[in-house]
View (cartoon, rainbow, N blue to C red):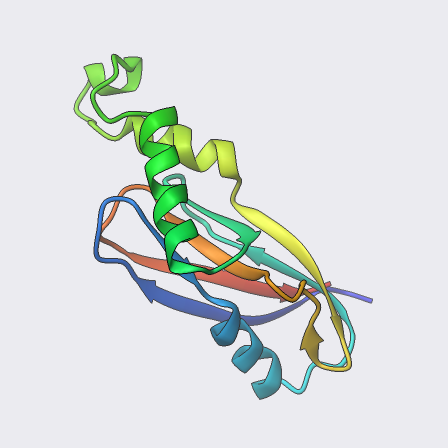
Length: 136
C-alpha cells in the first residue's frame, strides 16, 4: 500500500526555545480524513525544529527547554556561527531530538501512552512551522 499525505499542520511558536503539544491537532487531522488503521509518520521539514514523544505536563515542557539550553548553549563556540549564522545551537538541539517519529493508528486513534503526547520542539523561534503527517 502506498503512503498517503494526510495533512500539513501549521504551528506558530513564540520563543527561541519552546515545546508545544500537538497531539490534538494530529488527532483532528486523522478524524478529518477518516483514517482507520496504519502507521503515522510525523515529520518536520526544518533543520532547527524537532518532534518527540513525551509527557505534555507544563513543568516537564519547561524542563526540556532548559535541558536543551544546558546541552547546547547559545553562547558556545560553534563553527557554524563563524559565518553569517548564529543558530548553531538550534541545529545541534534539533539533531539530538530528531525530525520525525512513527506511531500506530488503530481504529482511527493515535496510539500513544496515557501520559504521552507528540511534542513539537522549537529550537530557533519564533517561527511558523510545518508538521507533515503521512499514513504508511
